[in-house]
Amino acid sequence: MNNFSVASDTLSPPWEDTVKSPRLKVKWKNRVITALSQSDYRAYLYPVFTPAGIPVTAEAPVDHPHQQSITVGTDRLDCIVELPEPYSNTFVEATYNFWSNETYSGRAPGRIVGTSIESTEMTSNHIRLVQSLEWQSPPQWGELNGAVVAHETRTIDVYPGEVANIIDIRSQLCPTNWDILIGPTVHSYFTVRIADGLRVVDGGMLVDSEGRKSSKEIRGQRADWVDCSGKTVYGHSAGVAVFHHPSMDNSLWHLDDWGKVSVNPFIETRKSIACGEALDLSVRIVAHDGDATDARIVEIHDDFIEATSQQP
Image (cartoon, rainbow, N blue to C red; front, side, top):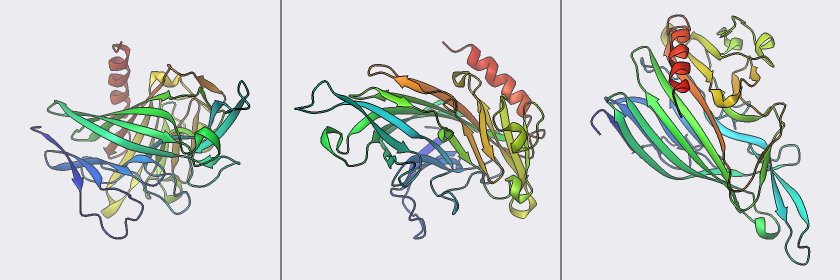
């Protein structure tokens, strides 16, 4: 590759016990844009930098350690399982949590583990990373003892810029041997944990595409995008915007002043994915310097919608 590099960070500091394998850093012209990271329970993107090198997401915050920067998951995934002999033709719902690190609402935590990664430099300012992942059930009875209940292909397109770094994430989730159901739940599917300084509780500014400026106004409503910005290190202004992809069918927003933004089409819906089918969802993350106006988020979103409308 001429402009990008993707390489393991072998010198992780000793306090980074959250990370269970070396981060895979993505650089553009020797400038770190983001990194693929892996913890005990999930694969995630961290850090995520603006063009000026300001981090806009948080990793494993004390209040919600499972909200690791940019993640994919759900706290309610059910498998339709046929019991083994002598109970053939008897089906039950085995229910799991691929969201938190502990049992949640009676649902034991599973693990989302990356198994391979391929990278291709598409153009001088576009790299595509295709990650294969396994959604693994917790150890339990019967034939689902630590089984892989779904395979995920996570395609990450990175577009560095001078004012904003753009990251598109596409998650394609395919059941293995059992039909699965997701939702209804507010804890799903793409989640972004905002860095300190950008959060409303730290004095940051929140705004959506409709001009609403508080989580109470935005939560449970529909909007094309949400942006969080504020002062960070040395008084530098930066922010992160989250865009709805058309695959989200203009779903409701779920967000909080303490720094969580979720793009979740399952708040009101229970989705069934049969074996041989795939759940196919996408989101765009924009890590930018300045506020939403400085970064021209409206124009970036217009270009985004025009590009997605031309996709097959």
